[in-house]
Image 1 (cartoon, protein in one colour):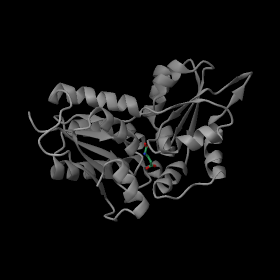
Image 2 (image 1 turned 120 degrees about the horizontal axis):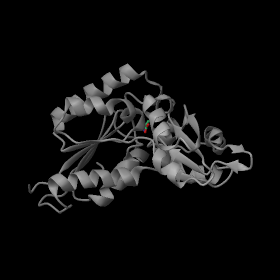
Image 3 (image 1 turned 45 degrees about the vertical axis):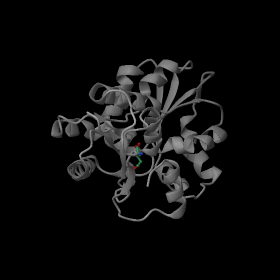
Length: 265
Ligand code: DGL
């Protein structure tokens, strides 16, 4: 096949850009459509059946309109409930998901105290409980479902800074101390959160390892693309990269500038 592969990267908002950026590093010559379901944002508070229905319907439209070769669901809140049904509905299309990086956190922690910082939806999922039971049974795991952080990250991408107090209060429940031990690893279980990593590091009560799964997701996407398309290679035409928003709204000026930095028109 001589044309480059086309990837659809999907999130409720701009958090998926953290995954997109890592995939682009490995596959700079692929074509990309980034879709933000900003009309449905935030996904964190949606009821499961409604969210499954919404994402499945949107996926049907996006696949029909753009015929991607791979779909990356760059959203923990959606991936943890909708991936199995998407794979059944489109069996020939590879779907790469984003799920809480509990396994690497459980492998790296020395104190055996880890926290999972996600949306209220992600931390409540059976999927997340199963990951903990399978990979982190030897750890004390604190689940923190933040109602506000994804919106703060979203606003940050529109050029609005969140106050230190607003961020500090959201991350504070991740930090536990018990019998001389304390949390030493925090899973970033929402793709929006790495956008605020500098603030998290600065405002943390003590240093911890913040675990962002984006590089591992990118390696998985690259591996699957390699199996179907071979190595990344320049094509005759320049790579196609576009962002679409389900609200149909034009991006604000600061956001358009940020998207341009990601190479997205
Ligand atoms: N970025 C999404 C995630 O990884 C969720 C943000 C939201 O819509 O609440 O979970």
